[in-house]
View 1 (cartoon, rainbow, N blue to C red):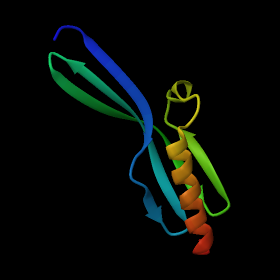
View 2 (view 1 turned 30 degrees about the vertical axis):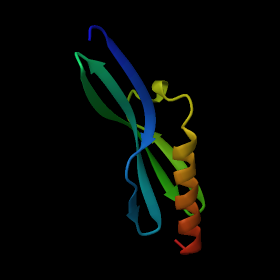
View 3 (view 1 turned 180 degrees about the vertical axis):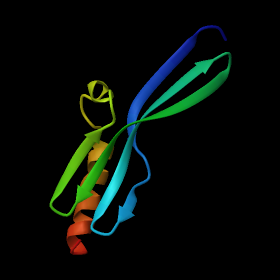
View 4 (view 1 turned 45 degrees about the vertical axis):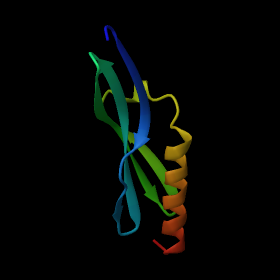
Length: 90
């Protein structure tokens, strides 16, 4: 196989639950294939701090230009975490 192909997308990493808030890392995952092998990289680009009454997206230095819109799966996770925090009174 000659040549290479690349795909990329934003994903939510495993949430970190703390009292009263959840921190969700947002990573840019890239997949490259070349010579019959597939390579994956994951670059952290932001963190989302979810609290019962709000969610804030904090970009890591220099990464805000690469994010036009968070994918639906990431937004769903943020909403679910916010509902859980509201239900627990956190």
